[in-house]
Image (tube, rainbow, N blue to C red):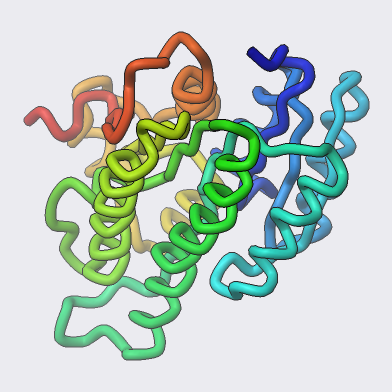
Length: 252
């Protein structure tokens, strides 16, 4: 068993929101953390937060839809820290809402390329390294949009459904080789992305809150703590599943 303070975690979309919160929590738990994001300034800021608190981290600018960049990201993680034990594939984007027949093809492709292809590419190279390690844990960020229909968000919903398919398939493929793959399905989380949606009128705050039995948005740390749990030995027999973090929104 590798001691926690010798373990290495990779977080994509680590510059803000759920990715940042998870990276900080990994570091607090003793992981060495590899931060990946398109926003280099943002991940350098997160890296500094980790180091100020005595942790270890590096930042790598990465477009997860680009295979060569993802391969280089994982290579950099291993060259720097020697191994890869955990990954949170969190990178994702939104585009302007539109009904299915009105989605621009370029918007559909962009969502699929970043949110779904990016998750698959990340898994591809993470798994290859984890097989060399003798095991590891992968957590993919899906959404409650991956559990049902999401009007005006067809491309996003399709990508998030696809992430669950990738999660279950990989979990079955690698279970006997020491790799567990799970997913989280957040509801409405208080992140910069959601803040932008509220500001631009793409999300009605009151409607979203009233649709949630707990009558509030979640905090990014509430997702991060579940990711850490799924990365730990406390979840050693959980494989191929998703945990819904939505304050009860999908139960009604």
